[in-house]
Length: 220
Image 1: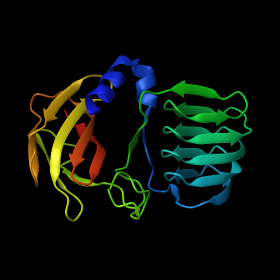
Image 2: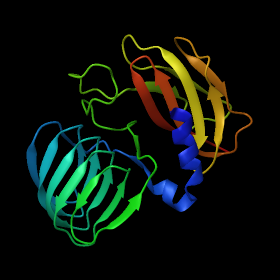
Image 3: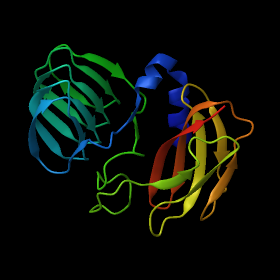
Image 4: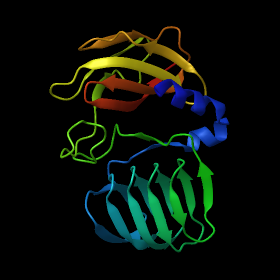
């Protein structure tokens, strides 16, 4: 399944794929129950199966699987994982979404993504439960990755109690997989970066409690 998602990403044009990867900012408001909102320029991280209602201008919504938003507004930016839904009214809205979502608002700009990738590195803590294996937890799967920016090497190690590393993939944002480590066991791993070009890469770390996604900058 993981290889299929990577292949789908590689088949999507660069300009589209870049918009399907987005970082959740540290000031995002976590919606982990049914709640209402209004305002200007706010960001909301709507957890799996939770609901937000409200209105606003220049708002951003990060919607986990099965979440929903109902309301109105102007100039919304919305990122929707599968089984999420949005309804209401809006003007100049932009929506990036996976397959299997429900969009019921007036004339938005929409873009289908094979997969919406949220970068949780700077997301607020506690946040939404993301594949942690503990349904009542609101912690994001995290690993420690340093130095970042990096030049010759990067170290990746468990960032949560009881976590072990199982696999590490490094992908170019607009290109192929450049590193695949499937025989990772346990604790800290050091990866040689000497053959990689400067730039920003997506790092996917498979662990015993879920998958962590971070972004790595390789400096010149």
